[in-house]
Amino acid sequence: MKKILIIAANPPATSRLRLEQEIRDVEEAIRRSRFREQFKLEIRVAARPIDMRRALLDIEPQIVHFCGHGEGQSGLVLEDVTGLPKLVSSEALSSLFQLFTNSVECVLLNACYSEVQADAIVQHINYVIGMNQEIRDDAAIAFAVGFYDALGAGRSVEFAYKLGCVAIQTAIHKNTTGDRKLIPVDVVGESRTIEEHLKPVLKRKRLTFDYTRLEDLLKTGRWKEADQETFTIMLRIADCEAKQYLDVEDIQKFPFEDLKTIDNLWITHSNSHFGFTVQNKIWKSKEIDGNPHSGVKTFRAFGDYVGWRMKYTVDRKEDYK
Image (cartoon, rainbow, N blue to C red):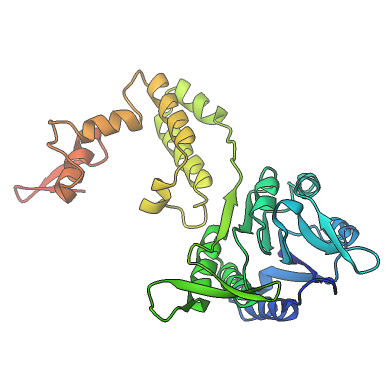
């Protein structure tokens, strides 16, 4: 069971937001989802800082969703005891979430200019989403619905973030020339537009992984077990444990530092027989006449060379398994 805590604040002295609709639409997204039994929604409205602290303690949520106003460097807008706006600084939010790093998995700040707070919170929470500009109600709601549609379908936070961004794109209006996408925004009584680069920003905490077991396996020459441990570690780093494979996009985003660490461990303890660097040299070598564009033939030759494939003969015709 994943618990989602929605913290909403729209003090009377601030411009009116459609928070009730955002909350209602999120509830509907979860209610109609395939895995609705795996989620529980908790809501705190007209929230004060003390309400946020108590909710984190009492509910122990995995996902925290803030909807309301953001003031960039000044902080997020909650309410004080009299209902007036109360700014909560990035530093205060970072300190608060540091205490809940073992329970909170994702924070969604659906508020204008909240990327600043996302940068502060992501030091302690694995995934934090903030907004890099002002964002109109319909775009904020569209993102939230797309995000929870995906989570409710069993997808990862990263996939849910991408679907939320697509949902915003479908809510964006084109100008009369059709060459740019624009979102109208009301700012202090003025009507202006935000351009296409408006986008929620996903921040991911730099995770550190323990390579002790992998190193122990390599030191003792248990290559098959080390290979499986490497695969397990790479799935965790790429957040691909659910699907159990890495596609091209996952590989392109794979952190260089971790790739280098794994490669160095294999090279060091195999006396340069194994490792990504060694495989790359073989792939490019003349022995298999390989290049990145030669397709299946090169892949088969590479597999034969490094022992991934075994040859056998059927009816005097060479085949492969």
